[in-house]
Image (cartoon, rainbow, N blue to C red; front, side):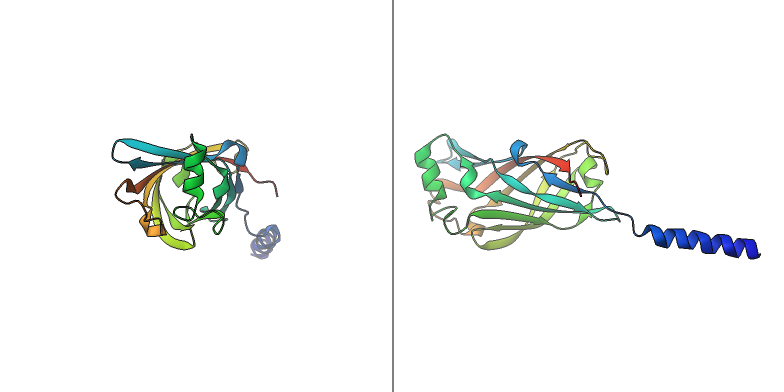
Length: 189
């Protein structure tokens, strides 16, 4: 009986000394990630743009719950026309001088959702307005603790008027289609 008690005390001591299990953090690789959008113009043509500077990370806690915190630099917008780019960055739309960043903060979700796909819910802050949004996370090959980059695709739509971009409603659709390609690298601690 004494040996069992000593063994149990020794095991408890080892568990306490080890501390809590660590989660794994991931960083968005800015050089390989992008956010594309498209808005219908006069129901005949689509105006497309791409943000080339995404930053942020995904924190995975010891229970396997992940939270995304991502930022997009509005000035990184690339478009086929410099004139249209200036117009889109102006106060009517992104108002990049006053609001240089777009932020997405997800609700906690099981890290396993990256592998199987599913809803990616959270809050999007754009032009000083924060609203709940839901995107579709496509299945990806991401293993918790894997040292390999993880490639994630996210699709979604949002209403531009919900974020104060309500000009030119007769010519431009209110619905914006989004397609994000995000490369995650394990963060070094």
